[in-house]
Length: 256
Length: 226
Image 1 (cartoon, rainbow over the protein chains, first blue to last red):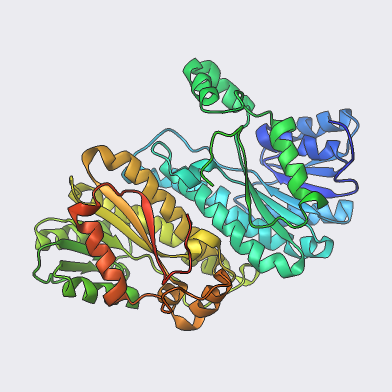
Image 2 (tube, one colour):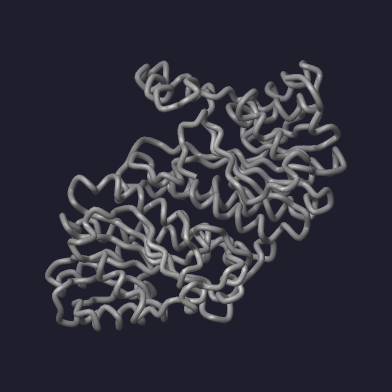
C-alpha cells in the first residue's frame, strides 16, 4: 500500500481487530498512518496481531474487550483516549458466529441473543462510549454489516436480521450525530478471511460458488480490498459521506 | 380475541392504536379477525398458547398481521438507557421471531404473514434509531421467511407506514418532515381503517400471490423508491 497517508495521526479503535477482516482493516489503517487499537476478546489472539503490525513499522496495540460488556467497551475507549489522546474512528467489526443454517421458526434462542449482543447492543454501548470523543475530533464510526441483511437470508435469517438492523441504526446515528460533525457508515464486505478460507477448504464448492457470483472473479482481500474501504470511510476523502453502506464484495450484490 | 364473522380469516397480533385501526378496517373489509394483544403474554409459550386459541376460533388462518410495538417518545441514542434500547430495538425483533414460531404451524399454502412497520426502517430516524433498526431487521426477517416458505406457497410481506401512523402525530410528523423535501403526494399519512387495512386485504387475496418478501410503502407518497 503506497501513496498519501490518509489517516496520519489519527487513532482508530477496531473491535474484533485481532483476526479476519478486523485485522485487515486495522492493518490497512495503520499503513495509512493511524494508530490502531485492537479491541479483542482473546488477548492471546490480539496481542500477536498487534505485534505483527508493530513489526511492520506501524503503531498498534491490543486491549482486552468483550463487546457484550458495556464496561469493557467503555474501558477500551477510555484506554485509547488516555493512551493516545484522542479517538478518530470506531470500527464495530465484532460479531458472534451465525451458527449453522436454520429455519426462521427455529432460530436458536441463545444464538439470537449472542447475535443481538455482539451486533446491536455492542454498537449501542460502543456508540455511547465513543460519542464525546468522536465529537471532539469530528471523527467517524464504521459498522460492519452484510449484504445478507439487505437481501434477506434463506439460510441464516437471524444473522441477516441483525445485519439489516445495523444498517438502519447507522443511518439513525448519522442523522443524530451529523450536527456534531460525526459520520457513521457501514461496510458490507466479502473478504477471504482465515475463517472463510477454512470453510472453502472444507467445502471446495463454496469458493467456486462465491467466485462465480462475483463479477470481479475473486474474493476480497481483508487488507487491500476491505481495509481500503475502511481507510476511505475513516478519512477526509469521505468527509461528505454519512449514513451509507459501502458494499465491498467485487460486485456480488448490486441491489442497493 | 373473539373473532368477527367474515370470509378472510385474519389473525392480528399487536396492541396499540394502529392495531385497533387495522382491526376496524379489516372488519369493514369483511375479514374475520381475531386479535392477540402482545401485552397479554410475557413469554413465548404464552404467545403460542394465545395464537393457538385464536386460530382455533378462526378455524383457519389466511392472513397473520403483526404490528410490533413502537416507542412513543423520541430519545437520542446517547441519552437512552439500556432498558430504553432493549424496548425500542431488541424486544420488537425478538417478538417478531416469537410470532413466527407461534404462527408457523398454522400457515399453509395461500396464507401470508405480514408485518406493519414504520418507514423509518428504510432511512433511519433521529430519536428513534433503535426502533428504526428493529423495523429494518424485521424487513429482513420477512425476506428470509419468504425465501424459505415460498415453495410451500406461503407468503410474507411488510407494510411500511408513515411515522405519524406508527409513532403518533406528535413524534411522527417531525420525522416525516425530514424524510423528503417534497410534500406527501397524497397530503395525508394514511388512515389505518380506510387506507392501510385495504392493502392488507389485497395481501390476503390470491391476486397478490406472486408478491412475497416485499415491502409495500403506504405513507401517502413520501418514500417512492425503488
